[in-house]
Length: 100
Image (cartoon, rainbow, N blue to C red; front, side, top):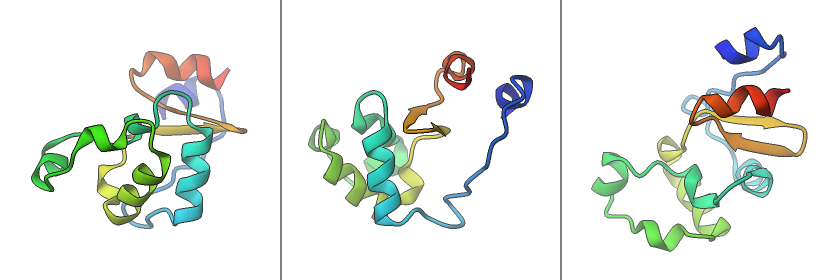
């Protein structure tokens, strides 16, 4: 958010933990995502505790959507959307270029 403010870009924060994205919104997001779709999923301790297989997500939009629909807490963040493009805002250095 600091980079968006610095670049004077108007933005909206979506608190997906309070209001999880519905399937259609997740499908639209993965279609806009620049980069591997599997990067939208956090492979952290919660992912491992669920016994999930990261290789099953590689290039598989529907698997990513299904997983995030059920376990929205696994969504990588921040996700930035501008027009018909979306990126994961990590590393943070890529955010300014995306917003310009």
